[in-house]
Amino acid sequence: MPVTFTFGEWFSARTIIGQTLADLGDEYPNLWTVTPDIGMTLVEFREKFPDRFIDVGLAEQAAVGVAAGLAYEGNIPVVSGMLPFLSMRTVEQIRSDVCYPNLPVKIIGTHGGLVGNGGSTHYAVEDLSLMCSLTNMTVTSIGDPLMVGEILRQSMKMTGPIYIRLGVGKSDQAIYEPGTHDITIGKGIVAREGSDVTLFAHGTTVAQALEAADALEKDGHSVRVVDMFTLKPIDADLIEKCAKETGGRFVVVEDHLAYGGLASRIADVVVDRGIHLTAFERLGIPQVFAGFGSDEELRDKHGYGLSATVAATQRVIAAKG
Image (tube, rainbow, N blue to C red; front, side):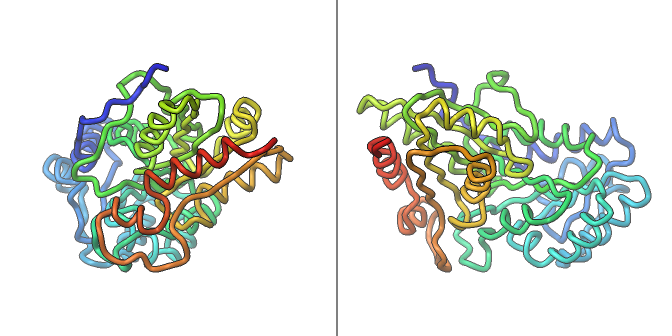
């Protein structure tokens, strides 16, 4: 089976964001960036367009409010920071100041999921559930740093807001060879073909899902891996297609609370469309505060690491139809 990902290549998503925005700043003279004192992703833009860079200090609510004001004046604002705070502290401002008037504010940040070893106050694990619940909000979770630039470029044409979730952003693993997949907001990516089961993932768990599929192939199992990087609007047609083509067997693994994230979004599609499934398992963070440790250690501890993903997929494959 051909593999379309390459492990061992690492890039900084922060640098890609900064350079992409710096390039877009020439094309869009109304592009602004705003940060709550966390501008690591905006260095290149700040240096090139200092008059369109705003640091409000450690005040995420103010950052969103300033961005909304800029958007009202016909600008395209990008708010960049750490997602544990951009997603939690600012929910009211995002809902009322950005989503209600449907403004083209881009919210992009790092530390989505159990990454960074910062402890439970510094993990964004409820964020996708919160953002998906907001009217007019598009929600993405990016696993390959090379995708970030394309997502930002596409977002420039959007009339409403978008939430872009990343991992740590310092050293991120490339997944796809450039040009091998169509990257379109609202459409999932079939990262690996397979016929026995579909393994859905997003963000930092995509690479883990591909590793699990590789391990299971050695036992003769054909595992399809879908990178559902857009959670809202979700690619319902792809979900239905996968159900038909992989025997109604689904596994979802995500670096988010097990309920409220991608698995819940997929379950909604299954119910709403009356899709028959043979087996369905969700792997994610249980209802606990996760504690300290590396992201790999915490995934293993809380039951959604590589070995747990392999085991769950084996159970789903073995389920009786």
